[in-house]
Length: 298
Image 1 (spheres, rainbow, N blue to C red):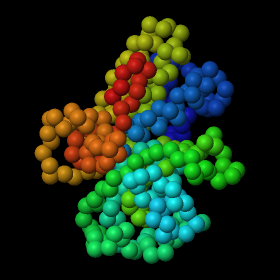
Image 2 (cartoon, rainbow, N blue to C red; image 1 turned 45 degrees about the vertical axis):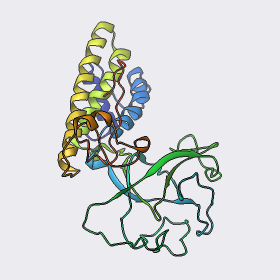
Image 3 (cartoon, helix red, strand yellow; image 1 turned 90 degrees about the vertical axis):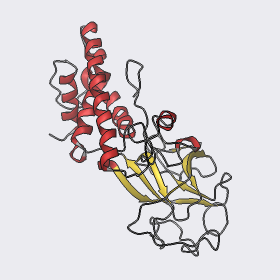
Image 4 (tube, rainbow, N blue to C red; image 1 turned 180 degrees about the horizontal axis):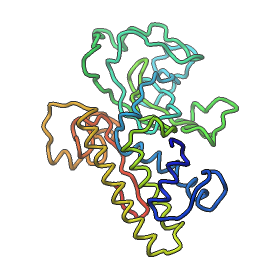
């Protein structure tokens, strides 16, 4: 029972809609409403907490090097950044880029260039200590859009995240051979955490309750109930992440927690040194608030 259709049937049940869904693409009215809501709800929920099951580490593809020391890539990078990387197609939420991932070049994706001297630091004298086994130290980065490096010819820009005829989404940082730790798009329910699935069912039910209800008053009631359930499960996920996935010896400070509610602190919420209200010091990227059909957010 690990198909998207099974998740959608659970959402129909939770929303009080009496309908047996044959397939999410069977063309029925419930299936059409579910198709419009399913992907968006899943993507927002993935950004709503640092889900352990969706954590992924990936070598980034270099697009530009402002120093000019890398062949076959561009040199135009917005200041004050040195390197520009392609945004991963399956990235739902960038968590952090470590400065000290490894002293060795871990290798680049097939078809990409190899820096002339990948083991040397940008500035001499800084050193490059091996920190395997120690905590990763996060670096500053910014997510932006750049029209200087359009996607390759033939790319299906309507279907691939982060690319368009006008340019592409990029990651700007000063880390050479950067690796990104992020929340990945997890399409298969068999890989989901049970709490994520339960939260998605409630979230999806809150979106479809009113459109599919023959009794609009009942639909509003079911929507409100499922929004409350989804918020409670998201809160539990954020608390669990604070207990399982991040570690900090710092004490939580009330004024800082309020300042960073919903995400990390500093530089457009992308300087990874903070989290959300459940763990304001250890989130390393924090999370986004999920928007709900009643206009609320959590």
